[in-house]
Length: 413
Ligand SMILES: C[S@@+](CC[C@H](N)C(=O)[O-])C[C@H]1O[C@@H](n2cnc3c(N)ncnc32)[C@H](O)[C@@H]1O
Image (cartoon, rainbow, N blue to C red; front, side):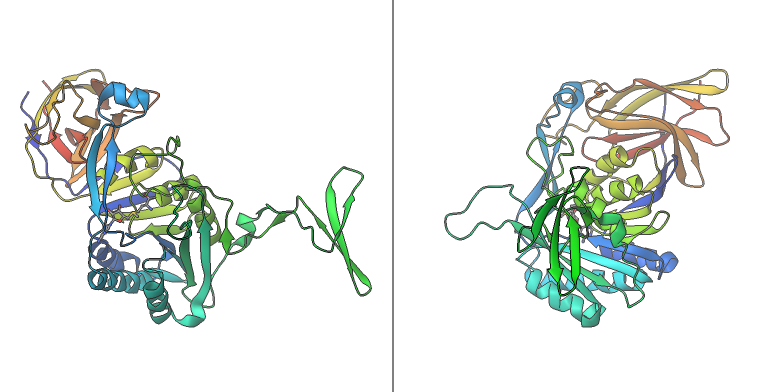
């Protein structure tokens, strides 16, 4: 059946709990757009920009049922090239950080994740934009992954610069208290109480202070209790540079409260957005890599979220049919073939499809009503989906393995 390509400005997925948006565009353009609607409204911003490594990063994409079953992707597609000159990078960061400050609420906070390469430059830039008085911490995140160097000491930490917008900031330390990782041993006497709990005591003048070993304590600015993702970590999405959820969980908990708005202008694989979703914060992510959209759909499922992207170039072959049932339309995806030569591998059947959905187009927006995406547990894509009868133009949306999304209007037979 003939399908008509539909120009849409956003793809909407309905869920419950948190709600959010993912904008596929340059961070500066996305932040400019947000300034028109969200100036002074964002509680927490986390940024994990490129580190100036000079590397080209990829996403290991799983294609077809077998690769989803095994959890190993064989197609390495480029995601971003971390190759700006120092001058270009710092100029981009100045524009981004200035806009971030304008977007923050008066009680808001910002965490900037970097490493030794850009740290000296960005520490001074943050002081300049946010004010030295608003500096809170230079968090050292220590991890053990990766190899060891014999030419110098191995580099095993990142730096996260933590600033507030102003003195009214709302830092929720109670939400991130954790058991002490190293028990106190210095100059304190060890005791065991009748319940078997270990505690220490120390006399200072007339007073005796006691501390239980298992009492939760506030974390310091050295985070050595959150491990980086391992090679075969189940949390891995295939997106290079992905950060662990536990790291973003801590940042989102202490920097925001349920219902507040969290922003990540370099969202990558949506780690911040997933942490926000789980903790019932609303979220906005920006990234200019199309592959990030496919990861976002998987990680944000269950929440209400929109994906906002410009029209994609390309003419893949898409064939589908729609037959009316009682109260619904039965839509069958019959064929989806990528343009020859697009990937350096031939794909068969629906292998070029990462996920697809059926829904309705109205006022230039597509609303998904039923969808199918491959997962490790359910590696096979549904060949047909039912869309409830609804006022609007019946449509389907297909995302290919390279992250492009195509929306088609379809008329039932
Ligand atoms: C270090 S990664 C972020 C990883 C992310 N924190 C995660 O957990 O997956 C940096 C991201 O910034 C994006 N990026 C780089 N320059 C950008 C720009 N000017 N505008 C928008 N996104 C950009 C890249 O596509 C990449 O996804």
